[in-house]
Image (cartoon, rainbow, N blue to C red):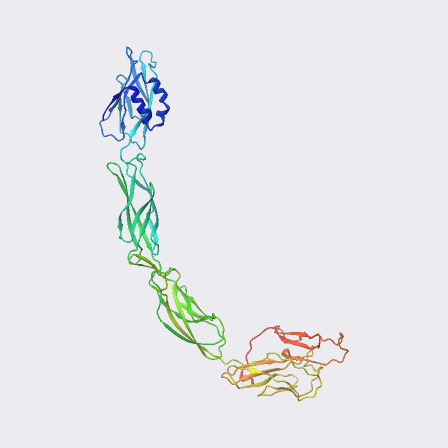
Length: 532
């Protein structure tokens, strides 16, 4: 180490303006006032010096000590912590042990000279700061980074999602504390992972290319932080990168065609099932199947659901439709996954676009068997009016019947409690066979006599449709009381037979007729064994 003696003026100006220690500037006035009496060599203190201690670093002198007995004194943290000392007689200053600049970057020291006879200060004290010169003794170290990280196989190139922070505790804004972070080793080598600087101590890991779970499920990435000091120092960190399997295989049907027969106008769940094969990781969204109709289900009659346990497609009929004849329905059904499809091809991430990778599909043929539908009365309601005590033999009503499945059917009388009418088996004509009596117990309080007929086709099995004629059968009765009086106006009500509120009774305010209507439909069946 070089020791250079300077006069007080030069030494103090260098200390005052060159020191990074704040206290130097605070003591500037004191130094100027005392500069003509104190003389010292410059003090250069370097951290971690490899010398024999104690080691001479400077010498103090004051021009007022002539012809006096004196002693020098040095005080401050450097003294109390055992780093600096002074020879009281010669003014030689020694460093006693190595200094770690990262612990003490500057010492504030005070020099005094005393008269040994009076123990009084010979001159004013000299105070200044001693900077500890930095050496490159600390490598940059990683202080914040994930040791393990998971990346999706389908991630688009760019930011990997990993942030790394390092720090060098050597003197700021010097080569000793300036560093670079780089990826020095990567296993396996593709895709290429690099470190991108964000600020002076932070990098993001970016990558170019794409991940392929089947080729590599995990990576080891070694990062190095290296400073610019002499000699350069460095440290490393290792990040374990795990790849999560995503949808890189499209599901495929194991069977390409399905055929089935079902009866029309019936709902069926689980008619049959589609099995699919998918090479992605089971029980992930990249493996779970999602079925959809491509064509043939415009009316929403059919439905395909996914069994969450087996991943099969469940085909069901969820909407009734009456087919006039046995009909073949052609369906095309496709399958894809819940998670969008991607694939790493030649270092590029390919997404499903309907051209390169089309969803697999199957053809389904459903034969809807036309059941023997019952004949339909048109219109379903008929108004029949008859005065009591009228002569029998008159045709009261001739129904019109439509049957899409048959051109031959017969009519039967289902309900005629007073035995007042007959029905022609071929034409369905309802004819009065007896005089009708309004006071008959078979005429209800609303003056309505109920007649029920059925039309039965010749299908196998035969189907029938019942018809009641009121309004469904509107029966006009004659009351000999004065018209338009409360004694003449009729009031209709149900005595029995309408417990389920299928029918409704109203009074025509003009004709005083009772109007019977069906307001709720209930299913029923008619078997040939019952004699119809």
